[in-house]
Image (cartoon, rainbow, N blue to C red; front, side, top):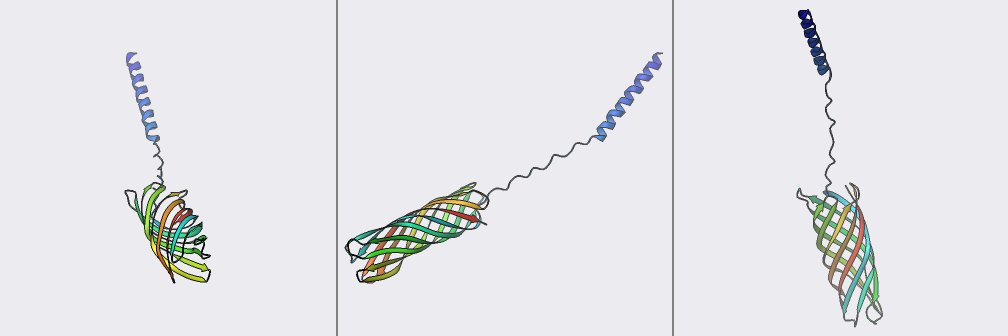
Length: 211
């Protein structure tokens, strides 16, 4: 009797071990799904945009008793290219063209002065914190200067330098906004019998598209 019970117990243990082994073979765990990490944002590449703002200009004209405050709105466009390094530093080159609405009388002479179209080519250096780029920029700038009225009709293109700083922030992978300040020193304009010194402070906002 004991031998029969021992044989039965042995058969049961072998059967249960075989069933567990079969279950282990049939159950193959699924490999975890691959998780795609989003690509890091980069400022590298070309871009183009529009900007507008306000400028505060001052001018002294030799040969005329007085000066003018050439304050007014500004509108323009810009185009450039950025190179972003792996450490977050960004270098770039940018050009822009603008129009300023700023006319004023020179003292009480009856002669009006104004500037209109202007442009610049600037180098940029900055640091990117993901989608926010803080930068400084400087380079060459030029604007047309005109004097008119009281028998005077003169114009010239004044060349000088520009320096400023700003913040670009990317709202999407392609669209970014901008807030910028710049100082423009246009040096001397040769206006016939007169020489004009003109400098300008500008604050502007813009929107751009990077490719």
